[in-house]
Image (cartoon, rainbow over all chains, first blue to last red; front, side, top):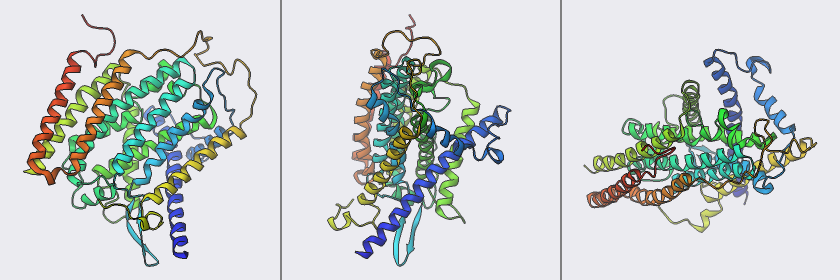
Length: 328
Length: 134
């Protein structure tokens, strides 16, 4: 029994550290994004709260918590109130299967540096990522606002379209690793990260991941010049904050998945595993921010054409070629 | 892939189902807490103008429960078809090296049919958006 309790405490500490790191870096990713976008657009970005505006995320969180929680009069109350939770929940849950280091030994017991190493981890990630669409679609619909509805519909169609490309681009990785478990996939890259063998899959995955996280150049669901704020136009206070947490956690999860599937996960020289994973996540996130500061928004038909006419056929052909190379 | 053992189901040392359920519970409590605290802390002074949907200062007319435009519905149907077939490809992918060329040939045929289907909906204009170019 005491053995069980010790294990439970270790597990709780692990979960607390993972969630804490995830939420804290989500907050500071917002800061980094605003700062970097400011620089890219030749302005300063946040610089009032604390040195270099470093206290800005905390100020924002406090402000959002104390804001009035407005529910529009004709909104579908229950769905409206729960939709942001769906977005935040799915994003946070996805990180459970990401390994962040090799097993470490604590008091003679092996403690794996992953919350849950289930054998269908990759399918679990996709299931959650598809469920996240509900948050966007229902949030937009339940607001009973035309802008929000349009944003919600656009978001749903865009996310399911790119979901396909995202999934198909990872099949070559599964074929090479022979497993759905993210731990096994990272271990299979001990010699060489898969980006070397799968540059096409990597490119498709990164593009689809950017579209999944609804960021410029794929931010049609929240195109502010046409739709107000898109699917979250009617949200205020912490419910808006939950959409934001969801978006930035999702960005980190996608960075982590990019690292796990193509960049060798936590593997790297000299530094310990979690730090390497963190570096890779931040690298992917910074590249996404850079792209946001550089590219204009796509038109909706261009967005759909890119997903359906380029990425999906390319990933299907890539699967066959990979299969042939593996068998030769 | 081994079946899950009863004895391993509830141990906190294994990174398995138990830790996943616990993680989910913690996340659920966290998000629930955030929702609750925002409903509790925020001040409440509703008035009809504030509760009206935001349409850039113009007073909204009619309901916003529009019917979904057909192209979006089509995308949803295509997604269903391709996603189900994606599931087949996924199940082949894990066993790819074990079933060898025979499996590869069959999968190639399957993917070729899938690509033909994509070409078909493309030709039929199922992937076109905006006004028709006649």
